[in-house]
Image (cartoon, rainbow, N blue to C red; front, top):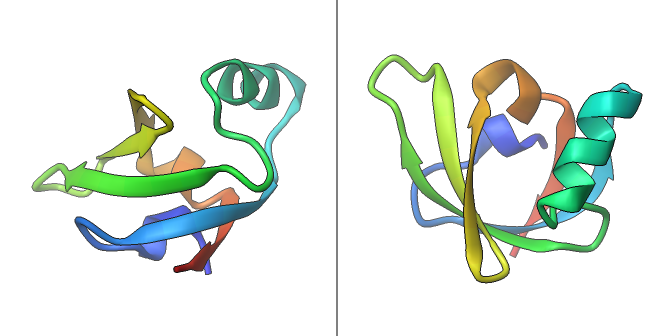
Length: 74
C-alpha cells in the first residue's frame, strides 16, 4: 500500500520511501522517513496533492510523490 491509497484521517507507518536522492533528503528533513507515523489530513479535490501530518508538522505532497511512499495502515 502507498501513501496515495490512504483516505482522509487514516493513520499509517512509513515502511519505505522509494524516491531519488534529492527528494528523499527533502522528505527526511521534513520528518518523513522509515518508521515515521503519519496521518492524512486532506486530499485536494482533483487528487493532485495530499496534506500529511508528520510528528508536529504538516507537509503537502504531490500525488505522484505519495505513490512512491510505502506505508502500513494502523
